[in-house]
Image (cartoon, rainbow, N blue to C red; front, side):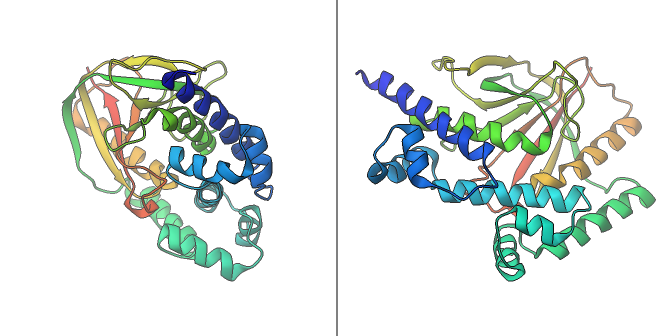
Length: 281
């Protein structure tokens, strides 16, 4: 088998694993089962997965569970105990330690902080932040379609990473991109319309295995920088659109998109940087 074909085969196998993990967040991690899905020996699966994905399968599962927990805390009224059980933790102390290590504060404080921010936005308007108007270069992305709630978009990014990892495309020069055909991060796309979940790529990369190449036009954009967990992105969306109504600018008839400037697999959620890019006329 040629080297390129080998990378394709690794990608297909790891995509199956990514799909299985995402569809079974509430189940215990079974490395033997994952190795079977990937058609690898259990002795080698762990190292192959870590080499391609930049983290272990257990770390992937924990990260996705905690990201879901952060969304539950920020956007629902689920009791913390229910969020903890859904994240797979048997005690409040264990959940608090893990969540604090990832998000910088315990679950109760994270929820309280989010609600205080929400109350402030409702009573005082969106928080003050800097919005830049910039001419952006075009982007070329390798992408898959994501249908359904935004809260589940991490699953699609994980599947894309399984395609990209064996091809050596998860380095510091590639960025995650989410393109919204209608609406924004805060809403599920309308029926029949899908969010594009992509990774910036160079001209030599071709699509395969359900991954297609898309070109995002450059030009004039309003760019808002969000720092912090993805679960708190609605705050920055509020600020961006509050700015838009007072700016005299008009949005262009083109989808907005997000660019993830760092990698959630090796960046603390509090340090995540996301640019929200709104095309302007």
